[in-house]
Image (cartoon, rainbow over the protein chains, first blue to last red):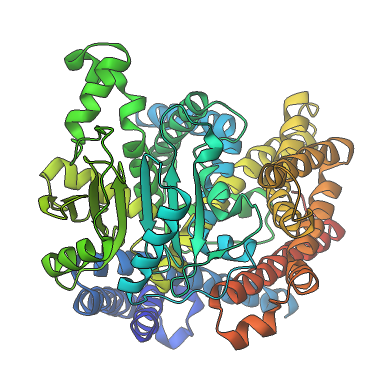
Length: 99
Length: 518
């Protein structure tokens, strides 16, 4: 259970960083965090965190089961990130139409 | 050239998906329920006590042998399944009658491992039948349903690969979902559901094909072993050689103490758990005992099997989990597909991925109709019979099937306990209600049918814990206090599923008020 929560705690931010580095979602960030450098850093951070999540899973439950658990964990993490970003986009358009 | 290729792949994806979408949706929903088969089994047998495992096995085996000796001394085969984990939470014995005896002479029972008494339960089809439906399409003959399921699985593999090909911006769209935009939103949902669970979908489809490979591609074996059943049997005997020969001599002999065999086997296997004992020709001079380890130790679905002489108790031979590379590959594919090794967290992930697979198919089916409906509303053409038919079939399958499964659980609590063929009637209830959902969808407009059936599904599931509390003493508070997690878990998941359908019904209502095009 602790392993699962820790993995989720790594995979969600990792995926979020990769998503925010993408052209389509980058403007969700506040203006001062945007830019080419920021995108590079986000992407690097995201992959490093996802990679360490894999290493952590392998360390905790073994090579084969660790890989399976990590792949499995990516699914809810991605679903969560999709939801969070869709929410941010919706709020942004809502604000834009009001002003 | 490239665009032409993509277009033809899109055509294949669309039409194969539509043609097989409904049967695949059925396979995904019932198959996903299969990851919770023993929990469903537990809920459908409320008479059983809360499961306790693992138990000291020695005394339990003694009780099982005594029970089988008293009730099935003449049987051809006995099997004792020990409670070691969530896959087998209770001690179970079963016996197969000698050849020529009526089928009623075979049977099975749950035993109390301490007292050796039979635990009486209602006659139920249980979670096992629900899970087996995903390859055994209930009313069809086995061979027919195997072919349908095999072809559908192959189609799914093609649909996944063509789906990846036609999805131009698979990486750029990875995290993209734009709600409230009609067709665009359905396409986004279809893409997200498929892409975030793609490793699982590819694994489950490919391993599904591995499951059926011998019957789906029989000609490969036929080329070497000759045609017909004789060739097939010779082939299977060579692929899966029996560890002990099964011929009875007809000379009676006293069966060895199974506790003694178990003791010896445990000393040979060390710390590895023992899951089952299989006894061939009990009480015959040629009795054989096989001690089987646990198939749930890891993704490789294979285990140690030790064979003993059933009279002298002498150790004869052993088979290790690893036989050869190709066999191990097949075993790990089957192991990954069934996920028996999965603990609670990984099991939840299996269920989530299965549901996303079902969502992938459902959104694909809806997308087909939304696209064409929009074209009609823009004044280009009239809603042809195909569109109207698919719209209605979609409701009856996507929402009607969950309603029918809910009805299956209702039947388990409402059918009289003493009823003849009770287990079969539970399944009849499922399919009768499903048929009713088709009629329902045929006579309502699709938009109303979506809303009403979703609401119905919500009510059917959300009220299951109440039904359980009214018909058994094992209500939610009781099972939580007693630590019966499977029972409490079922009630809680039913509430969750009900809440999810309420959510969908509410969203559909809001959407229709806004007259959004979908």
